[in-house]
Amino acid sequence: MSAISPTVVPSFRGRIGRDARSGYYAAPRRYRLHLSPSCPHCLRIAVTHSLLGLEDVLPVTPLPALPDAPDGGHRALRPLYEASSHQHPGPAVAPVLSDDWTGTIVSTHTPGILRDLVRRFGNHGPDLRPRGREEAVDAVERLCARGINEAAQLAGDSEGDPAEREAALALLLRTLDSLDTRLASHAYVVGEELTLADVELWAALVQLDAVHRHHLDAAAVHRVTGHPHVWAYARRLTARPAFGRHLDLDALTRRHHAHCRGVEAAGAAVAIVDWRACFQEAGPEILEESAS
Image (cartoon, rainbow, N blue to C red; front, side, top):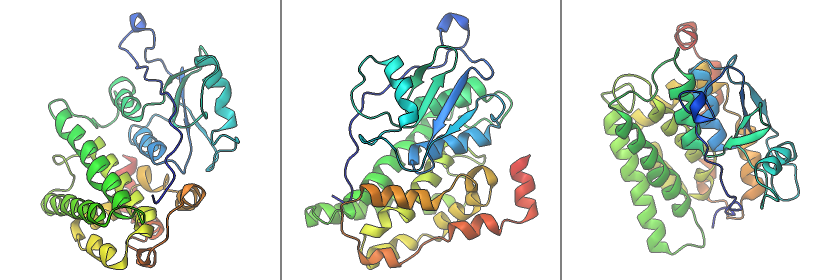
């Protein structure tokens, strides 16, 4: 395998309800996000949090890029895990949505956290999960998980069956083909407005370039780059502060090297996107649009 699978940790899947009768209900500064810059799940949450402008409503506690506990967890999260699950098994991992009133964990489940940010806290921000388009947004989430993240990892597995690796690469390329066709005539992946689907796709493209590319051969990476609309879209989103300012490539690389046991392939030398330049070269009009 190209990387060690993380320790399976029982997840917390609490949800934020509509009012006090639900137990966990939306209240300013009651809850807190604990996010690490190297975690792809945390990246999706951080971008969504910024897009919704929740800095004053839902504080964020940053965690180190690499877990600092011997078991692969974060020392700072251990008290929350212990308070929420007696003799909690496994490491205290991010992301975490905690309740400051009780000192316990509400959720570690990224899809649920994202939905609650939008539905319970995002009243004054953009509608990132529009009514009537939920299934389309969820379909993109599944597409990214299977057609990009999982397919790229399997395609780069140096110990995998050659036929399975080839099938995984074919799935990855078909996924990028379909997305490239879509983005050739649309600004965003679902409709004409930014949604959670764009956060999911952008984060998957970052992971594809920053991590999975290093285990693909050069020919495969060149085929991946042959989707101009997909990568132009990735650059355009990166130029927006809500996306670009959360992208810590050094942290992603450090996490990858800490966990990876695969063989680096020739694709590592074929860069796809200069992510730093995308944000640094953003024009004033883009910065103003993103701030509005």
